[in-house]
Length: 347
Image 1 (cartoon, rainbow, N blue to C red):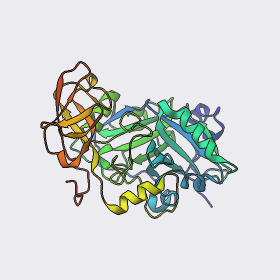
Image 2: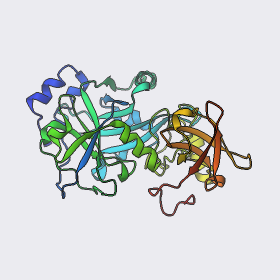
Image 3: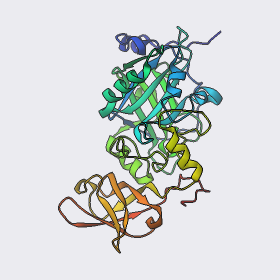
Image 4: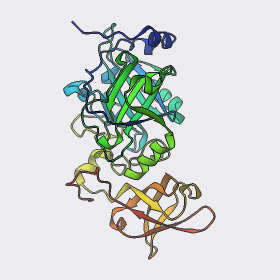
């Protein structure tokens, strides 16, 4: 017999209008363990959208579409999983996070799919194309809100224990960010709830600070950092972010990715960079050069003087340069993120 935790009446009223999302109202949640209180910053993530994927073929359908293994979701207490959706040429289309919602009253193994909000319609259309005759349904969840929880003191580590929640019945999902523990926790709740009402010692902060943190540690997210049809998953550090399985079998775009992995040759990677001029003055895709004029990669995106660039590893420790949109030479310095595996050849 499944144990079902009911949400409050306020939460149920919020999601009544959503057919698929209401099925997830009573989803079983992992027991919330308390830890010593860490003061948290809570960031609203309006640039990310949630899509409900439900139906008896949900797992098998997604298994053939994403880079990671759906068999892992729900096993060993794993309730959140990172992955990419690739095109047939093996290039990244969309970066996603999947959240397991097991324990629904109707017995469906539904998930919530987090993606870049600017491409939500494209993802919905793509999923419907791949659906064929499978028993799986998709719907947007506008009455759910997504939050990132990070320590106000960035040197503090939350660890594996969940943040202290004061109103568990208002929280649909509270899981550690599957990409790296430096990204804290992901929380999904009703749009009616403020984070400080459900999480202890929490202060709502500006979303720009969230992006600044991402760029500082070198974590790509969304279509600006991972241009659809251009970015390659292994160059985008998908392995380092636990976003791919090389043993799951076939999926769309697998061939090139598997071949590149088994050859072990990755010449470029997305890396954090500091710049001598604000990122807003730089064109996305602008060419990087060494001081001697050799090609060294491409600029992606950033905030102020922090950003991400696709850098040739052979030149990653050298001073780099590129031209700004107004023709001024800008210098860059790439760094190797601390969260990359210690045994990485790139460290």
